[in-house]
Image (cartoon, rainbow, N blue to C red):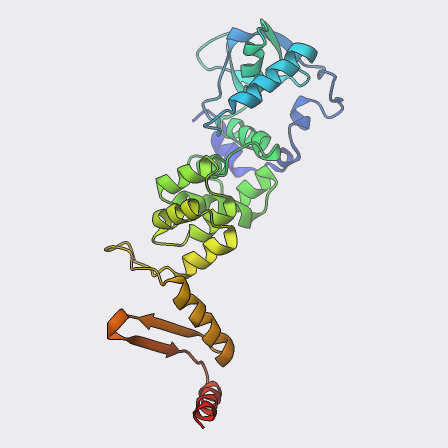
Length: 295
């Protein structure tokens, strides 16, 4: 950790949530370079070791390269000096532009240099990507986790840094409790955020994720599946799911009786019917309904 990180982690970095304009010059217009921008040879720049993104969309990079060939780089790349390597710099914000500039065969790129701590470098990298909705949910969650674990931020402080609510930050970080395979499915788009929220408290998230993808379930169906799947507590195999006919019968009986009903059918051996009530009045009511049907 670089000098000044402790101080940086304790301050209230409210300005970052407004974006990068304060760092590049508040009075700049979109197609005008900030007053303190200068050009550097492209080979003098190096990727940010705190880059929260783990995947760069190749098609998007190629599109950006085409735009750069036609119009140049409209917003300079934010850099900081690279420790121990005089004359070389680490990219803080703008790695996509740097990669696209290489494809566009530029020899130099516009930059703005700032002396930033490790904490600030990670914060800005996350803010840039989150504000542009450019991070996968897992990359975003990992970025928040790094701010908490490595730099001592609270979830509330992280929320202030990135301009999000504290519940949003907490919910994103909960995604990291999902099994690695499920995180991968969320990362590659096989699962949506809605699906992931339905799985995050389940002991059987990996199995459920496979069912959701295989059957093409929407979020509401995924939530229902997660509710109806017995919890295994991580011990032993998953209990078999109730079939669609049994679930439909439960809903029909619940609607008729006005109380939760569970049907546990065990095949030729029969089964059990459970009606749940909370008050004696409810018990009296269901007793009266059953008695009336028996007349």
